[in-house]
Image (cartoon, rainbow, N blue to C red):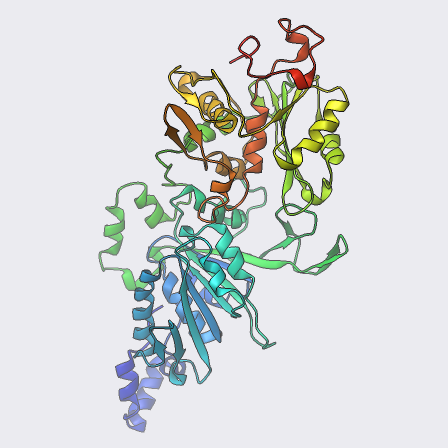
Length: 526
């Protein structure tokens, strides 16, 4: 991690006599005189030698993350793009690189490009391009810039979209040069940054079915017609849906302050131990589950969701299905999601890539296939959802079309004091009330990190006397979720308590689905 010799010592060695150099060589070895930086034994050495396409490193404070990034760049790469969210924080990286090199020769502060002098890079041409992404869309300024090493520093402060975008230009024309994305990070502290735990799930998610050892290579691939990336057996290319798929290798190597001998005896360990929780667990032990803070205006607190997921278990006998929620997609990169509710128990999600549901009848067919007990189908009819709704209605099924912007006159929160700005706000707030431990409704949600993530993302505000829950466009912001919350939406829809037609005696058994108002106070069940 540290420079093996300060620049001043290396300069003095040029003037040493032959006998003096031989004596020093016998003590430390010739390589240590030539190299300005060498990794520490242990995790840093393992990461330095790692040939994964995507490498995650860190977990706690003091593990030598910055040193690994700049040292590996100096020694093993030619064009390094070093990125942080906040550009002002790059000053510490400049200072560390100056210490290793011995000067700021080759650094252009205006362009933030550092062309490393030959003596500090074994005579190779090495260039660092420093950048930052403080605002949504800033990552596009770096479109098309090739690099054989991409460093995402403090990756636990990034959202997923900009990282994925920047990774698209990790490439080189030199067949001898290995390309790598290096993500250095401490545990995330915001819900929108939890993606990184899912990204390195085999190493960081204790519920992952096939956990991986530190430094163990795993391979992942994005496949045409399949939602999200999938872990595959190895790095061999294969053809899927008439497309050649090339998997990428990935690994994570944990590093903590205890792995850094240069910090022993400095009092740094005592400083970390004196931090208040949850910072103490995060910085000292790299605890990825500690300290993710709920937003003050978050609709559903994370602990409520976790409690509901902890209650979930597959029943020996299923209760009748009451509701099926569907968030449809028609082709493209989105997905169709189906959620099913049996009383207060929710079944596991059913996910279908957009290419599997190219039209309304295909979405409707999936709903029919999973329907049981004449359950009510609740489907989003904003945009493409109108077509499957019409098809289901024509089949004589009880289907309720949900428009997020619909008004909800007369509906209040459980205090009876607050109204709802629109149907979306009402649906999300009803799920909040169901999950509130004070109401003790026993809701059981399937354990799913992505579902937990999406349920905890929306925020709310008051508009006059009405509760307003932010919409999809707000969550599409790269600094928030960066995608549509389709998984959570399906469960929000399944939560709707529309009575089955057989139970609606007030309106008579001849009521037509399209004439039925699920918010009529005569039939609404809380």
